[in-house]
Amino acid sequence: MQKQAQLIVKYQETDKKLKLIEDELNGSEDAKKFFTARKFLQTVKEKLAELDQKAKVLTDNYNALLSEAKSLELSAKSYEDKIALCETEEELNALKRKVDDLKAKSSSIEQKIDSVSKEMNDLYKEYADLGRKNVEMKAVYSEYGPKVQELKTSKDKEMAEVKAELDKLSKEINAELMAKYQSRRKDKKFPIVFGLDFSKNMNYCPRCATQLFAGFVSELKQGEIKECESCHMLIYGYDSKEK
Ligand SMILES: [Zn+2]
Image (cartoon, rainbow, N blue to C red; front, side, top):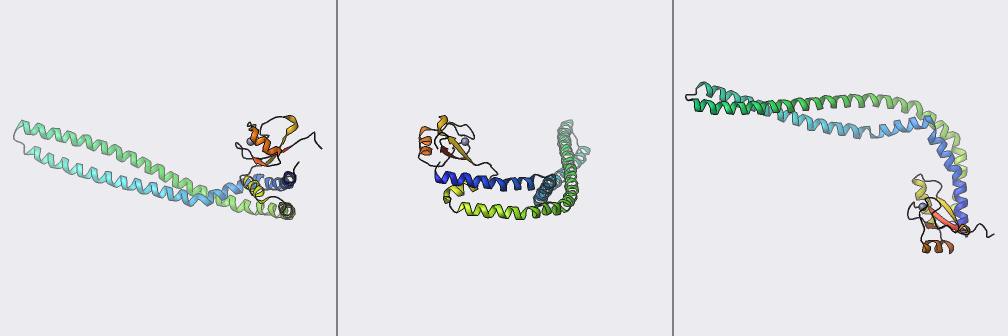
């Protein structure tokens, strides 16, 4: 195995210790509750702003419908006055048709007003739910925050030791390779580095089983550490029969 491959494999072995501690810290029930609460509290303002925006649109809509209803009512009234003064049947029928038309419009506006009122009621419920959840999540945050912190503190020393070890190891590793590794690590991927055993003569990514091109494999044979085009994990080659 090439030197850089050995180094990055060694780095990953050490990094696994750090990963296990991180998983323990993040995976406990206490931590999950705490992170859920923290995420809620970080985003509650945005949710509130969204509701405010919805409320504004609905209120504007509601007011516009009310004023339309009002003007229809006035028109209806003016036709009624005219009907009282009608002299011919023809005139009377024409006016009645207009009144019917207004009634239809008016009833459609009423329906719209009902539907907007219903949406407004739903929105008030959403506000109330959000407020309740906010209180609940604040309580979870204060209850579990100290527990999570306590667990974290109990691991501080161990973590610092592993990190120091990783820091030392990283100094010998090619910077570009290290950066690729760290970027996968940030995406919470693990393990990141995989070995392809040439003696088995299989040209598949050891992680995702995507077929590797001949050129890709021959570069691995020349000692390069390459990135799988499909899963983006890092692959090095070795021969288990060659010692
Ligand atoms: Zn792959």
